[in-house]
Length: 153
Image 1 (cartoon, rainbow, N blue to C red):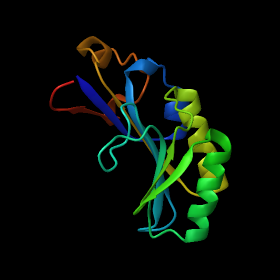
Image 2: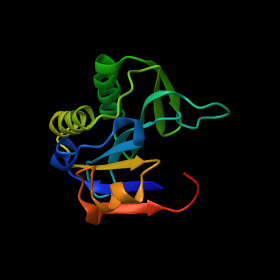
Image 3: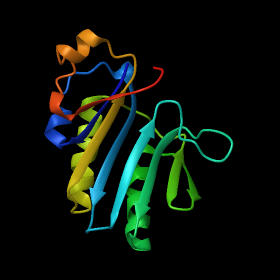
């Protein structure tokens, strides 16, 4: 089954013990106001863009200043590399370093929170989760924040 953990805090992720190969998506959302926010995310199978998926870290934003967006892109590119591709309200760092382990995701969330003075909320989605893993909470994430995703795994 696929399972999404949402509204996670930084310490939730840093204390997690999930198998990295089962993670297929993570998202770090940074609030800058009531409607102003940006997010940094990754998809295991690439982020849909035009006709072909783009592999690497991506950014989305809503009502964020161009200076903040520029600062965010420079911050991420300096850490993870990648070719910058702008597409409407998304930015791709094609070919950037990819990761899904809890320490790296949690540390990035913490750095974004501190660098951009923004509270963060994390979402991590997993695939091929067994009923036993879910019931025994082997991923060490808050079970009350788990949402099963209907459909094929």
